[in-house]
Amino acid sequence: MRWLVLDEVKMIQKKKIASTRSRVPAGSISPQLLMMEMMAQTGALLLGAEKDFEEDLIFAKIDQADFNDIGLTGEVIEIEATSENLRPEGAWLEGTIRSRERIVAQSRFLLMNVGHFIPGQVKSFTFHDRFMDYFQVREKIQA
Image (tube, rainbow, N blue to C red; front, side, top):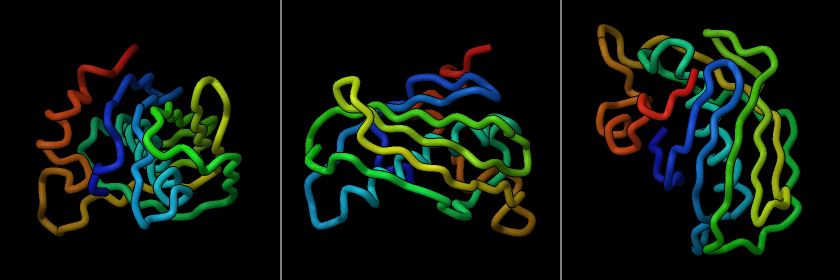
């Protein structure tokens, strides 16, 4: 994950919820694709917290995705990810995006923990230091 679609990590409650904020940028990329990536990245924060962001994750599958409004270019959106069955090795997550308190997108997707992408690598490629420091991820974890 490149983490280029999120503007702010708001909070992470282990095993419960992760919350972020962003904007849907203007451009040639489909807004639905960008919103799906935002939900996946928010879910990755929730799953990553299970192993203290030490290992790498992959976006494995989209089971369902609904988009109610795609005319959101430039608007601030709130993204949440939750899971009822979060396990350190992976989870089905529910993603929700709201704009002005209205749900504009929802999805159900699978993220998997894959250990390390690069054999012998000690640190996570997914949760690299620059990302963790920039978004102050560990400081956003709530008990």
